[in-house]
Image (cartoon, rainbow, N blue to C red; front, side, top):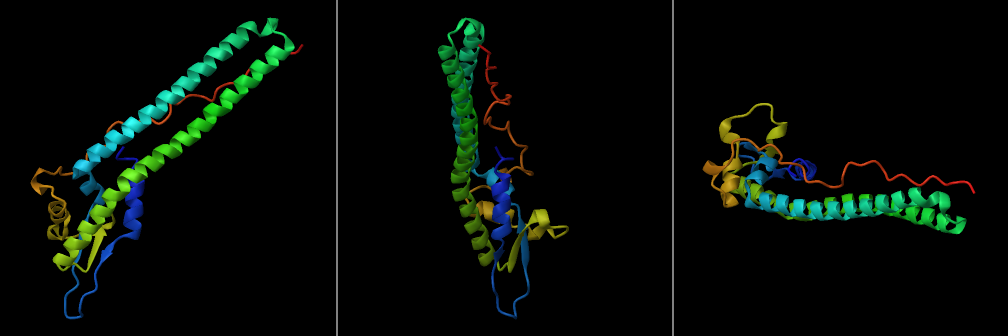
Length: 203
């Protein structure tokens, strides 16, 4: 799940670097942090992962049901097609084609649904982190706060992550030192070849 939300985090980083105007007699002070790292420390991250997994499982189960229905009807068609009346056979072929199209449409819609669910869960947390970063920067006199992913070198005291975590109610001493590897990626749809269409038989 955390790999999936990286796109949203990167989008945040591109548009939301915190900057604060200061009077000319104040020195330039630059801090840095890692939004993804902070997100992983928040209790909301586990809830987001759980909610996405639940949503993904529901979609996958629905898709599996559609596959099972299609496969069952396809096998029945292939077994009896040679003895079917032309009208019945063509009706069965049309039914199978419609089921095939329904499966493909559901796959597309399921992916969009999962992306929308992910965004709806992550966006409020990213907004909260954004506010905490800006508050910490203002309270501590930072002119700019940048992503440490864009930082080639810098002093340890420039890392404001512990301050941001405290602002968000997380004890920095209990935080992981590095972002944890992404947990098993929530299933979206089974990796399966598109349902095959029945081969029409000649009369």
